[in-house]
Length: 167
Image (cartoon, rainbow, N blue to C red; front, top):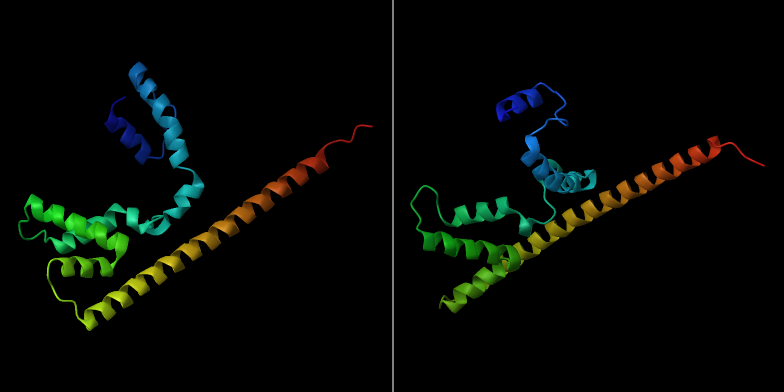
């Protein structure tokens, strides 16, 4: 069965769990399947609902967005420019606006009071927003854990109540 047939079958809702790919494909599937199952756990997938990630600092779309904000796609940017903007984006994501001011200071730019206040406010709001998101996620995870434990306990209690008592 070639890839086109598999895509068609998936598109029509067919069960593709038993598709065979030959001996080589089965070996590959043996290696990939445990990884796939681990990465497709419900607790991991719920973290990514709404295109959210666990950590914005590790999110490639955020880094890419910053890189292309610094180096325009509409004008040709050489490899050195893109590499420099990559470093700036990572620096900004890890350390915030304060790091950009330090970089400017090292290059000889004079940093005024307004720039310092702006950087502090932006960094503070960025940290606050990140902490709020984290606390909401942690709260939802605790609720989910509690619900799972309750459901499991109720299941076991139901199972125990249905067992016959042997004297």
